[in-house]
Amino acid sequence: MGIGISPEKKITEYTQLEILLVILEQLKGDDFKILHDGHQYSAGWGAEFAKQYLARNQSGIMDAAEWIQQHTYRTSNGQIVYVIYQDGTQEPLRDVLLNKLKKLSGI
Figure 1 (cartoon, rainbow, N blue to C red):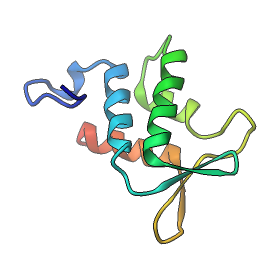
Figure 2 (figure 1 turned 180 degrees about the horizontal axis):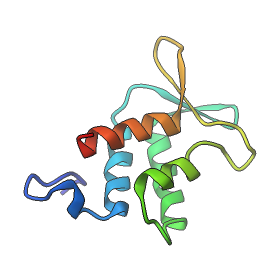
Figure 3 (figure 1 turned 90 degrees about the vertical axis):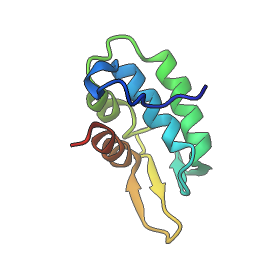
């Protein structure tokens, strides 16, 4: 069974790690590229990369939004990670993930 939100659980009942995993799983289906350190990758690649990074950096997660803010904005080389949409427009990956979090939380 895939990762998803159970209709029986309210969003507040999920751990912050579970919420992050759901958001990253949703990222796999998105139709855009991710610009990471000057290279473009599929959203699916980005999701898998982020899940591996999350596995190594999950200790102390108190808040999903805070984790997104701290870990998805810049690469280790200091470059901003962008989403590149089909029309060529760009948006920081951090902002895309925060919007997914808001939608998931019903805010």
